[in-house]
Image (cartoon, rainbow, N blue to C red):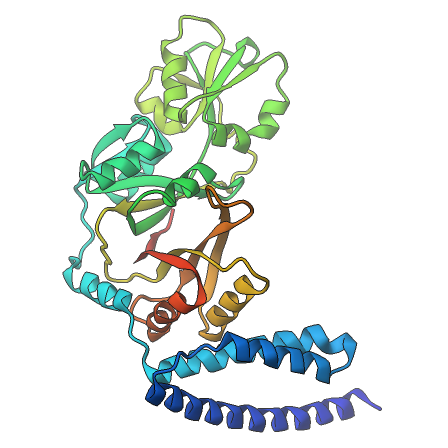
Length: 381
């Protein structure tokens, strides 16, 4: 049989499938009304499990996994449709609406902002990108930044969450589980790492190099080519620059941002020592209160799922059914729970979209717990 003939038959089959899909959704609508009248929950896990077993038994063995996947998606689509018809109430949706009304229309350019490190650190550069006239307050650790926000010492804080070369900043991801905050904006900062030392120092003179562990990882190729050089991690790249500037020993250098040359009496021994020139770090701006500024088109969530097969798949199917783009998915071990995880999601969806409202109303029934971290826009680097 020719390919054109096979495709003609496939089109005919698709037509029948669409007719049956429309009929199935009509029945789903009637079931939704029944559940609403009887005050029944939309999701019936027992019914879904029984249906998946019967589907698997009704098809050839080599098609069972595919059939189960198809029907899992159909369940999510039907459940999403029923939720929309019933209009499931969400207290969180009210909080989001209230925040949209209370938040000013213009993002501030002058505020007290908590940053990890000292002047010249990448967090400081990200801060100035978002707040040109910021009153930057410096703290020794990322945890201190979160604490400063919780205690009201600063209205905003800046922390890095991921790098295009080495991935997520796991320390910050773990801190996000134990602190109360909201994300109000994010920024991608192009990061360049230079080898800095006191004026007159040559590459062959260097015996020690200080830098932050993330920067060390991002410059691994350059560092692996050096001989008899000790690499020493420290709090951040700006602290590394200060150590190199104040050290009484000869041959001490730092891998740090070129911005540090504005603050410390150093010169550039070698520019651009990072593994790739396309090196970006994404920072989030956090606050204690929920603030949602106009144009917010990204939403972040943290959640835990039932420790059972298919839990994550069902959630992802639900997001897909709503046609929401998932741009980041990160998992981190839950403290005190062996082999159980917290999942961090970044979703690309306007805060004004009905899709987001519906997702927020469905999440309580789809996971054990979840935290809405905020809706915000991202400033390009």
